[in-house]
Amino acid sequence: MRAPEPEPTDSAGYLDVDPQAASGSGRAWWDANATEYLDEHGAFLGPADFVWCPEGLREADAGLLGDVAGSRVLEIGAGAAQCSRWLAGRGVQVVATDVAEGMLRAGLAYDESTGVRTPVVAADARALPFPDATFDVAFTAYGAIPFVPDAERVHREAARVLRPGGRWVFAVTHPVRWAFPDDPSERGLTATRPYFDRRPYAELGASGAVLYAEYHRTIGDHVADVVGAGLVIDAIVEPEWPEGHDAVWGGWSPLRGALLPGTAIFVTHVPG
Ligand SMILES: C[S@@+](CC[C@H](N)C(=O)[O-])C[C@H]1O[C@@H](n2cnc3c(N)ncnc32)[C@H](O)[C@@H]1O
Image 1 (cartoon, rainbow, N blue to C red):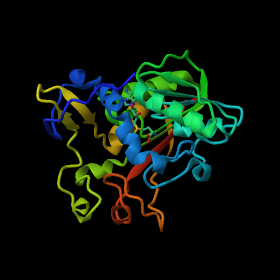
Image 2: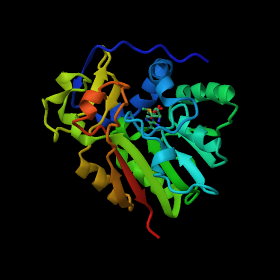
Image 3: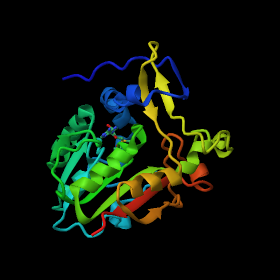
Image 4: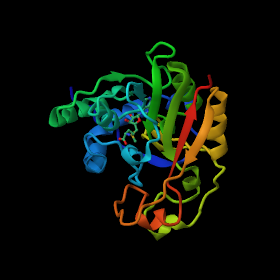
């Protein structure tokens, strides 16, 4: 089935949008833009690699999930399931979930090209179709959280489907970035807007419908969401831009990476 044609963007900016009206925009946007997104970033991500962020930090080096041998692992907002495929290729029992079927479908082509079958389930991260305490580890690399107005629901669902002691690791844009233009050049080095302005970056159609929304949370907001879900924070990892890494991803670049953090990865666990 072909993805629906994306509606043209009429206006964009940091806007007050009705969270209720914007709540489903993530699914529609990622469905419509799956091909374009993977054309742009697929080579960087690799079909079966576990890259946490534009800084190129790999799970193979970082080990943020801990030892997952024999664990039941859940990926949330998995996109084309590249990270899960890397785990599956190592014999880990993993399920990749995403709200956009267009992204998951793209992953099927990667299954074929790599010969690694990755179990996938279409699901909104805010309503996961799994019983309580199903998994030992859950994670997301930039999935779901930036695209929903109510991220605390994602954390609550992650906590619910993890067993006591289970680990939840999530990577998001580093909150400091919000104050700077999303530009890889010199322009992106000067703070131009308040870090404390929580209005999302939104793209609207001519009818006023929210086509795309990306939400800002300060470090304190993320901590409040995670703690509010009953989770314990073990670490906040801020990957540094590695020497010799010259890939540009949207507003992430070696120039900015040398001066500003680009990603925050929260390592948390369910008590007990
Ligand atoms: C930037 S991609 C991250 C996925 C993958 N790690 C990557 O880098 O391509 C964001 C993903 O979050 C998914 N997403 C957005 N809103 C979601 C939601 N409410 N529930 C689950 N996934 C969601 C999108 O469909 C998309 O596949």
